[in-house]
Length: 242
Image 1 (cartoon, one colour):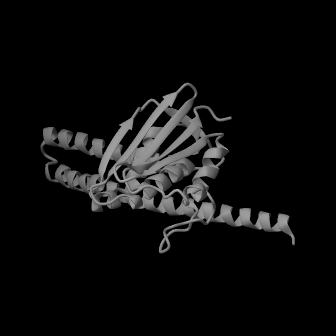
Image 2 (cartoon, one colour; image 1 turned 90 degrees about the horizontal axis):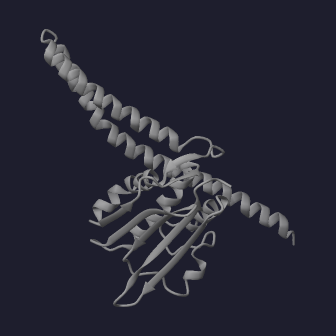
Image 3 (cartoon, helix red, strand yellow; image 1 turned 180 degrees about the vertical axis):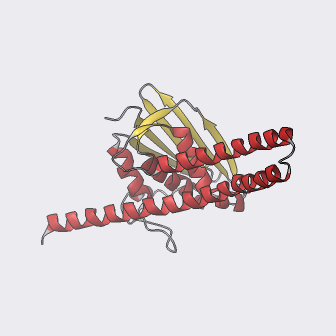
């Protein structure tokens, strides 16, 4: 039995699947951004039309030009933010963790709305960490997706960002049914899933690998009782790359 070769092959497959999942999240985020871009683009088109129609009225041209500049600024901001998420995985830079958390929520906004989930956010904007934005978006997107899947209609999704000493902490919690005790030790195992129809069993395994690459930690606790139920995941990562 060639165990080392089997282990190497398994790790290679996991890395390929990790990259594939990162591209999937990138595609979902891109679709969300395209939706958000539509509004400013339509406004630019309308304002340009109004400028042409009112070309003989300098006051109106100045007014519409100022409004057009505001829309272009919004487009520039969205463009830079999106490009910033998907630079090379070797590129780490200081980024506000709340920005990544907001992006993860935007990726799943359609599902959040469909289930009428009550969203509770507690972000500290000044919490920054040296990370690769695309990878951390992948981690947070996985955790948010799991919470949404666990929630019933009108359930509560809680997400917070804070810091203590030299670490940033992100907490994602839901008041779903919780994780049964026999399953809990396996949730970070590659290819373990309870989502038979659409799960790959890689979301948490990949998230754990990424967090640990940053010398961070990912922990969970859950409750399945009749009066208290739900699941909490907490990520802790150094503010400065090691």
